[in-house]
Image (cartoon, rainbow, N blue to C red; front, side, top):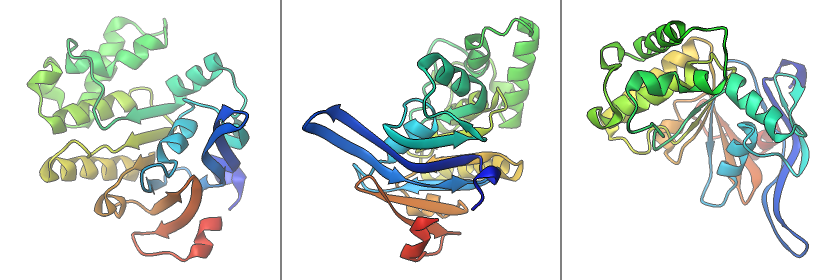
Length: 244
């Protein structure tokens, strides 16, 4: 795959924790490419490196070795402030536990990333209009004034997705987005994910559920920090695919 075409391009990316003889290799020489507009799942048993990979792709951490290009920019060696700017403007996060502020309304939760940017080019009214439009996009226009405790789990996750999209990110990272939901609410969230994908969003999603992973175009399987296999379109792939 041509790295120039990739939104995500990692080369021999590793993350080692600790120093000296007491070290843990959480991710070991992982090379992957994800194209703009792809919907990709990441799976693996506990300790496989899923969380480490997502932290690196989300610019929450830096690789110990190897490289990570996001939209053609090498972000491997950026400092904390530079990584924070990348996260703020290019990456939207969706978490299993929603991570909503309990005392803030749905609308206020959605526009929170805009406030973190300290962007003085938008007025408070414009920020709220953007937030309202984002809520409308996930089917919650009429719930804007409700607190998280007044919303169902599925509605809270929709608020979280609207918040992830408020900055029109290049990449959406979803960590077990259906993990806290019943099957009906989970199906609704996956339908929304499909809508986002159909709109051209690039989505990387961690899940432990094979049925959820089968919704994506490809599933990247990790084991013991290594890239194990890549399954395409929900069908079993050969071990040779792991080197893609």
